Image 1 (cartoon, rainbow, N blue to C red):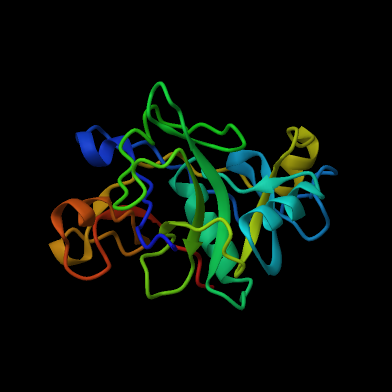
Image 2: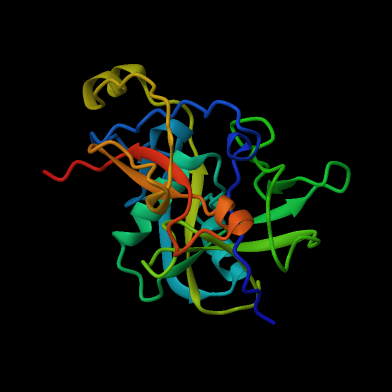
Length: 241
């Protein structure tokens, strides 16, 4: 039976009220493709990883094997900036289905926390501690999909039947640091770190004119926020020029 519940990326500060983790906006300047990455992949420098899409409609295992053949795995998500990158990347790919496979989450039997199948841990301590699921909260492993259409909040996650043969996948492969001389000649310096503020379209907590509100949905599950645009993070808007 297909799981209908939303699986949501819950940052510690969203629950505890702690100061939000500084967000470093990624460079938009083209980056030389490392030799470890397949042709056509896209680099995201904050994670030292490259990403590519397998476009066929597959089960989770089929998509994972397609990634492994090129040295990668279905993508994990370390932090909110990577989640936004994946959302924008897949939106621009014009996939036949607006949903795609991410990696698998495995539940640690001792801590009860979920860790990605490639071993990736979240950047901020305890970021997955407060995962909230409605139907899959006791599952030991979950195949995760991401919505990339506008009927759901940007970048929403959903646990789904691993045997469902209907989604493309986004692959991820880590690479060694790029040659410093290449980086300096092709990548503009990153902007200073900024504090990402909380926002809510329906609550009067608007972002600045040069930002957009990226929902994380956590508070909507707790407080039943109206509509699909609940609390989120104010992140830099894409350059429209």
